[in-house]
Length: 338
Image 1: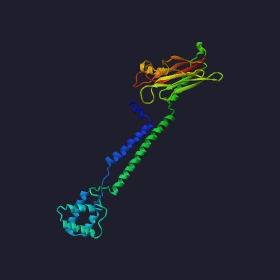
Image 2: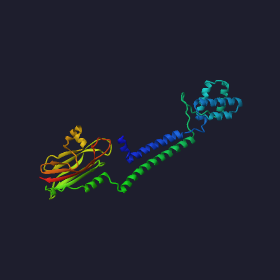
Image 3: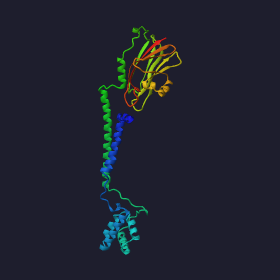
Image 4: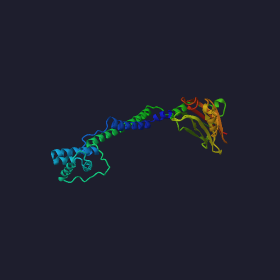
């Protein structure tokens, strides 16, 4: 359910969903339920085979009473390709009609011209077709419904795109922007004031929930500009499903160009740190330590030492276990050369 809610927050998904719903309403509900195709102005040739025979029987009876060959031929020709088939069926089963009258009727309708040569294969029942007016009305309705559906879908997509741009135009900060602002306001550790040696370099890594691609890295250079290595912080493990990601652990790493191995430690939420399954899984990535405001851990290589201090942090709230994923994290990285 949470994953569905996350998907519904995406403008593109909502737009496509609106388009599909509109298509269903336009084609099925309106095209078939409320405004179904109606038959009108159908001719005798559109009748089912049994009704064509009924039509022809009435025509034969009328011909017997009036002797009007012209009218008889007109009524017979109205059946088009079904005429010969209906006449053959009546001849095979005349019922109450005198076979002699049927023969006279056949002669009358073929006197002024040949009976249409088009025949229907035995056992095939001619099916009725909608009159031209019916086809035209249905086609027009379908076109209108498709156009309306497309316009509604396009309008929904345009609305959400404009809303996104409007939020951007009003300066609504992204998670990355919020993280950067939090890093600027964070207080740096003054190691010199505590009597410690000032670090060669200090960096501030900041994370905010929603930054699913969070991966801060920094180049470590000597005072003379020589490249010594790199350090950084990135997402190590998430918990739960859906977007944005629920980060339960980060990797803090230190690379030394003079060392063959990159040192990594895993900064874990309180829940992850106390959960044996998660902790055992993450221990394979590096030494675990629990994130606490003001807490610190040290990473050392052949020629570098890094102190990672949690300047500030907060946990997210939701259906997941308490203190299981980070809402925000500010981590200070101080580097000394041995």
